[in-house]
Length: 309
Image 1 (cartoon, rainbow, N blue to C red):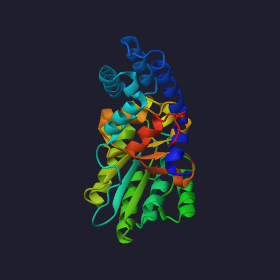
Image 2 (cartoon, rainbow, N blue to C red):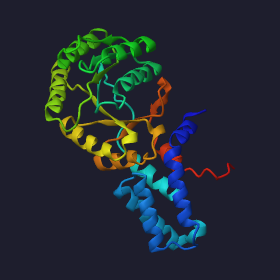
Image 3 (cartoon, rainbow, N blue to C red):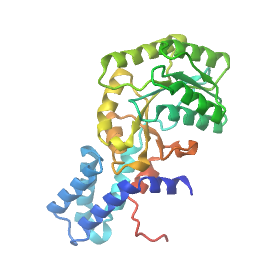
Image 4 (cartoon, rainbow, N blue to C red):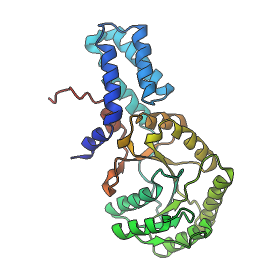
């Protein structure tokens, strides 16, 4: 199964409910009414697409029906086109420095999948011919260091770690120094999970980034926020606060295969203007893949009853 088919399968819970609602609305009448547009708006918001994108889709649908009528206006196609346009912004791939290691800080709240994401990103860059190192800077969560080391062994990636309870900034300092000495292409830093509402923990993250920056000017070159798609729009507050404390360069959305709220990807990127760079559809290393806006939009609004030509 190709990744697009896996993406469609992963988004099935979101897609099936959303498409069913849209088709129910548009098949009742050959005309689109104010009431129909309100129902369409409610269905899109229920899938967590967010108000801005929802209003754009509704406006585009209304305009298409006025000019073409039901026969020439495909709401699913219109919605897919509008979403793809909204998602196409910024640099979608990982940055790569011309000299020295590219340092990528992996941040987020507890339970979003930061450790596994750091390892999978390491595998991703190695697969394209680069080298990668992992840094175990979560020195608080039980078994966090062992978990990253196991991933390192599994994927043949070196891991820099310290003792539990050690200063995370000290571990990060040592990791940067090691990555420079070993001429690594990438260093992925697995930071501790922290609630976005805890100011002291956010200040600790800022300190870690300052230490990295002193050791290697310009680092971290990427700060990726890992978001659990199953939390829906609750992830919006996390994204806002992390972006304030440690300006984000990209988002990684995990667990998309377990939610009916996949539209949150669109809403968060639209509000923050921070690109989604990777999405996760499972536990295996290959289940984390670069984000392709057009494919995501097509999978989200795919009509299961449409026949392939």
